[in-house]
Image 1 (cartoon, one colour):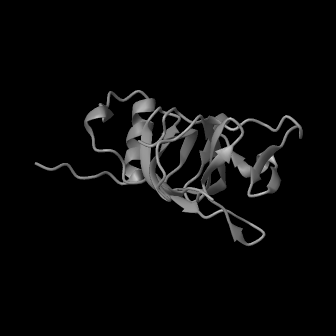
Image 2: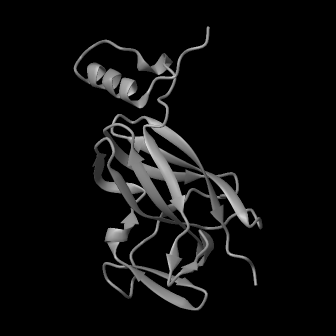
Length: 180
């Protein structure tokens, strides 16, 4: 017998019941159908599209412009990217040493400074609560030592972890800077 997929609202109600003390075993239920809608948006500066994966000092930069919309009230605790082409797990991009409190990217002869308000940290400094219908957008910025692919388009999985430590996978496609 095939189990019916729960709606995000049903899943949320079951988690609230369990949190209130009801003895529910949620481990054997199918995962919720998209508690969060994830849209990757090509990121642009001055109307020019930029790649998601490109060389940076000491490795490779990964920048994804995300739009996250909650189908049900939820709280996001962390975001991470996994892919076969990554040799090491990405780590959060650090603030620029020259420009305090800013993130800096050097790409195609261009130096771009970004305010932290535009950046979604992989491990959020505090949980990000989203009410049903609310959205959050920003750049997820990470670095890694190297990657194992010369492909122009790279497939990856964005993992979102909620406050209950449940993880939700979303398939995304990243564009790599073409070699010159």
